[in-house]
Length: 342
Image 1: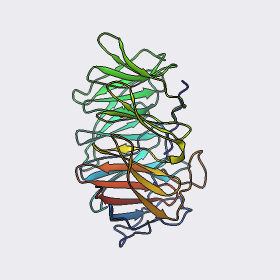
Image 2: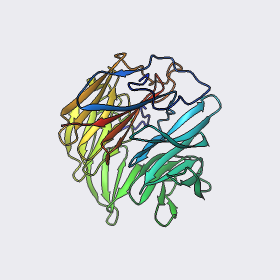
Image 3: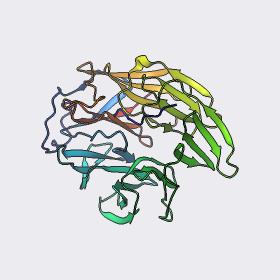
Image 4: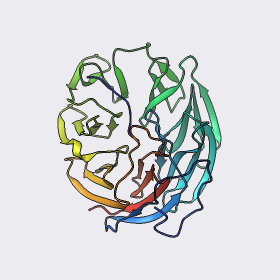
């Protein structure tokens, strides 16, 4: 199976604008977006002038309870950007920190980490101040990042797979150019993809626990939850595999036209579709639970990349407070909703 990691990667305020727009050197070309009234989604705040940088290999919108962090572009041509921290309940800007692209961000145990070229930086999530910097020499750029409670896993330009332990701040590197692509190790199991299929293997015994050959080429990095592995394909299909057995649990056909990342909490899966909807699916069976429409009705696509699209379509869910933050790439907006899904 050929693998392509090309992640398809955010209204005027529906309320009085929570905060003033972020000044930048770009302009947004599409009209501001407004949500269609829906009892399942209570609008909390909206901010304009914020474009989450579109990068298929790096997470650029992450969060912890009550906070969301975004890498927002200041100058697309010269790579200037900043990490902006917002309160998920009020939209208030808490702090900002200048970074140079290709920066990426990841969160673990209520802490914020950034990767920049061959460095991992530990950032105080309350203040945005640099706590520590860990250099990983001779690997080139660190990208395509996954994180668990204890470890960060990432590809590197050198072809070596990086494992970084959050607790003891040590790292290890695989042999270069493995004949497979690992994603993460969890509870002694490695999840990876090779030329044949998606697979899981026992680290101690090296025995293959399961494999599943997805028919379509996969167009995005998988989303791992406690029980599921969610795959988005180049044809626009969405597959959910059982994490323990590799069994296909459910599939959505290509007419969904997913244009954002996919994010999940314990019960639901969230994503944007290019026909203008934010959709909520039951994570267990793939059935649609709720959807929210917007005006204008259609989202401008940013895949393939277009000069008409400024930022990314991206989502983050604050599960502790039942808040969803959405980034619109065509209108440079962040908007937050209180979820009241049945």
